Length: 165
Image: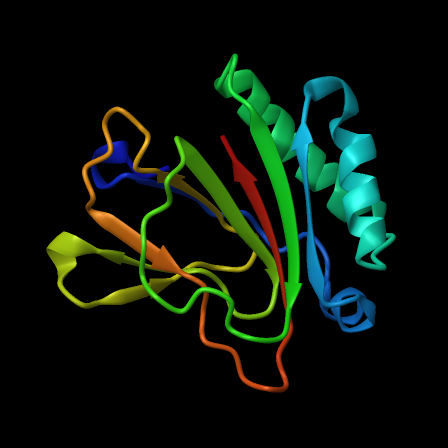
């Protein structure tokens, strides 16, 4: 994992299973909820089901990531968001007004980020990679990293998980 000097941590994970067919059959939209440790899996299942996704492997992964945030950020409200999109949702590079944000993309174009000290070079995350962004509300946030949703073509779909606190 990269050190937090850039307001960014990255953990590469292997692609655990193919998700393209799941995403093609899904409903385009966003599902979100607050999460606590005792109900994370149930909430994740319900959120995915609201998008016509009934794959328990995705819900299990989302719950595990949400629970890791609950454990790492005691006392903070943790929010889970699942996006199935077919258009570019957030095209401008920005920072979030959160304490921390975790983003992972299971299918489709991945989150892009830019390190200010590297000029205009844009980095693309890998599928299933975990990106941890310090937000503007984090006490050591230094404004060195900006991120955005990737540009999308009309034929693409994206499945993205966001965990905020």
